[in-house]
Length: 204
Image (cartoon, rainbow, N blue to C red; front, side, top):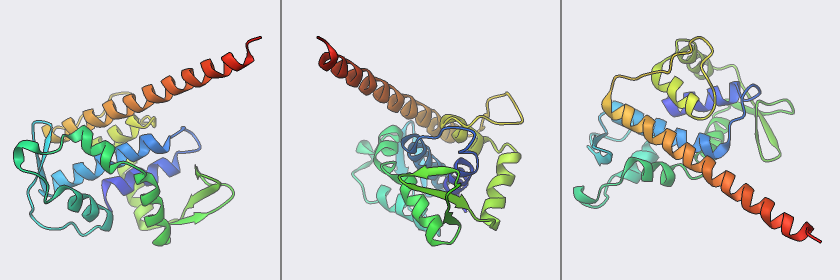
């Protein structure tokens, strides 16, 4: 399992208590993938730019996809910034993780599921992967906790904000928070514009 899969599982598990937007979750999942790639030595950060280290293909299918999307890019001077990567990789990424877990038999479609995807509602199966994710969550593992906070799931055991001690990881987490805030600002602007447009039509 990866941090991204653990995050997806936690979002499903706690979706009935906290509203988690698919866009927010997708951005955080892209950040979680980048954290795991850094941890595996597959990429490094030069400031806020991603530099593939090309030390091998990750075993996890979705993480391998993320790594492949980063390798073979332009020269170092034009390496992608972390926030740009989050937006590019994060497009519909929550749906990709939903499909992957469903194909693996770790999700079932139920009427009383935790998180809604369109008209479907999903229920987590009791699997070792789920127990591992829950164990990381209950242990307040800093990266998982910080990513969860970014999508609106606060930690239940501590009021202190999680603080990973790796500079590159901290850079990624900060970028995730910035991207989620930017997405929320876009939502609010569109809501205001829609309301204003509706008021024009209601005016006498």
